[in-house]
Picture 1 (cartoon, rainbow, N blue to C red):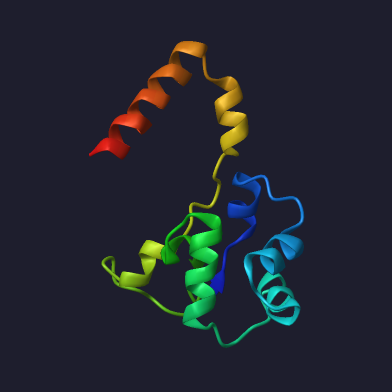
Picture 2 (cartoon, rainbow, N blue to C red):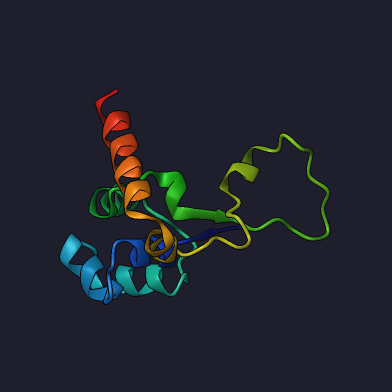
Length: 116
């Protein structure tokens, strides 16, 4: 089953009021509520584009695939790319545990990747 996976993105972007953020980004109040509550069955392409633009992410970042426990999927099943790790460490906690030198190196790596 495909579902929206916005909570980690909101947390990473330090968005404390997702509803307000989405409405200010251009979604209608009804659409913002549906998206936050993961109630929508139809996901418009212009909403995907708006979310990606506002959250600075890719469409794959917005989606989470939850496999059906009654099915066996081949190892190369394409939707497995949308399966999030089961225990992802909070990035802020990870950063707080890094030494200053590790932070500098990570910043350098990020800057070099952006230039390429």
